[in-house]
Length: 97
Image (cartoon, rainbow, N blue to C red):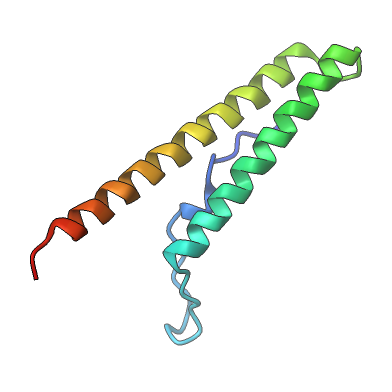
């Protein structure tokens, strides 16, 4: 059985390093790209697991359902982040300068 992993580990806070100069900054755009890539990988893994169940391969139904739920949760999370980003953008655009 697989160990449970976080849905989007790239968004977890980074551990502080010894020197702040060596710490690499990650932009919001890079975080979004990583999130989209991970969501895509999970969707593909779920599709592959489902195809193995349909073809009668080694994969059992429980593993396929778990991978499909992981992909669903990841997609829902990404959609919520997108919605919040759009709301923030619209709020900034409403501000008067």
